[in-house]
Amino acid sequence: MQNLLTITLLSLLMGVVCLTVIKYFSEESPLTKTAGTLIVISVIIAAALSVTYSNRLIPELVFMTFLIITGGIDALTKTVVVFLTGLGAVLLAIGAYLSGLPFLEIALGGLVGFTLYGLIYLVAKAIYKKEAFGFGDVLFMGAIGLFLGPWNTLIAGVLTFYVALVLILIQKVIGKVMNRTSEVAFAPYMAIAAGVVSLFSRSIVELYMKLFMV
Image (cartoon, rainbow, N blue to C red; front, side, top):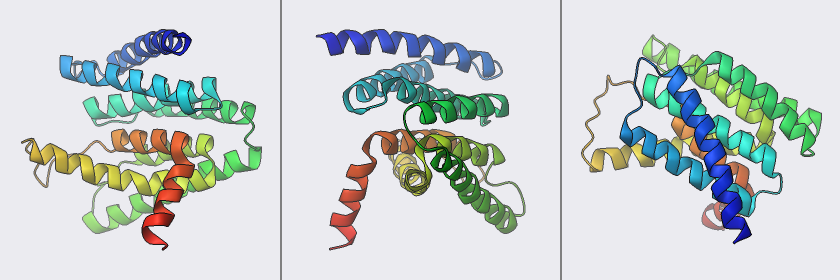
């Protein structure tokens, strides 16, 4: 009962923050009922999982709020807001440090995230002769890395592509039309992968070992 009350209160707080910020930065792409519902569902799931599984609750909730806001804005506008990413990076670094992550791991995590997706950005640009992979996504993964640390950032970076593959296939199956020239918002997939890794990194590694290292 106490957990349910905590989840409800945290969901309300996170929901107000997420919806307010997303609406403010997505004025040119109004928040539809469907998008608003998905954001609220994401908030409830994030709050419930954080309360249940995280051992650093407040930093985790800040992290989840950052992921939902960034992913939500990108889904609506196809843009990662640099100001919010920078502000989020500062808050995540502070939260990670206060929750016990050594400063070196925080810095390495940010470097790994930025470098990994920076290389993907450069390779994609060289292949397609245009910015096929947004630099905002590079900054977003760098900010994520500050909170996750280097190893979990690598896992999140790779897992993002599996999440994207599965969700794009689902979109096609249910009839959403996507053509090769359509622009895909990548930050929502990054946000899902990062949230999952933050809470379940050990389980992910154990599952990978069972499936591929036998």
